[in-house]
Image (cartoon, rainbow, N blue to C red; front, top):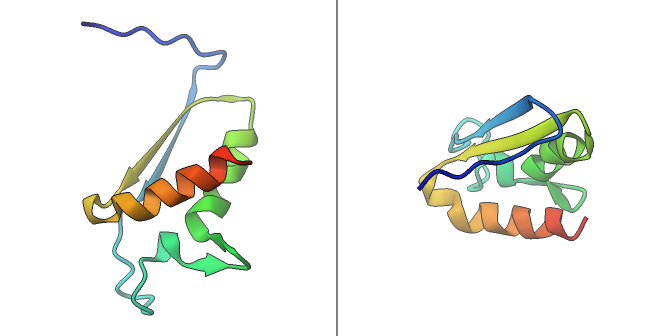
Length: 79
């Protein structure tokens, strides 16, 4: 079954956050490292979510980071 989505904008944003962060160190992948209480990914996504020109936001994550990404999504939903 096909699903049709209507967006107010034809602009899409693609955020690739699938790395493991092995170069950064610290045992936590870079997108999920915190800076002043918010993850790097949260800080990267927030301005995109607030931009009315963006009609679709797609985030690519590493399969092993599903739990961490879920926490970021929850934090952003509370925004």
